[in-house]
Image 1 (cartoon, rainbow, N blue to C red):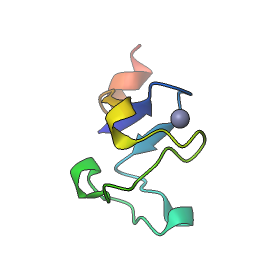
Image 2: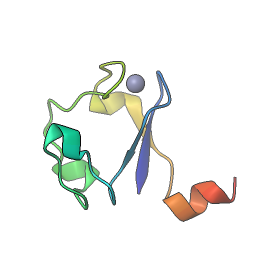
Image 3: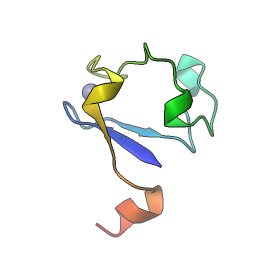
Image 4: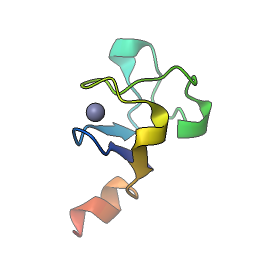
Length: 60
Ligand SMILES: [Zn+2]
């Protein structure tokens, strides 16, 4: 599943994780720490919305 920041459009892809921040590929959104912030703009987890999988996005 991919989650998109509603503020700046940055995407978190569970399949890729965020290795730069110590988050391993395959880390589920619900398993991210509550203090997780948008990598770009600092928005909180509540400001992200689920946007489907990478495959889904390719069809938009
Ligand atoms: Zn953001």
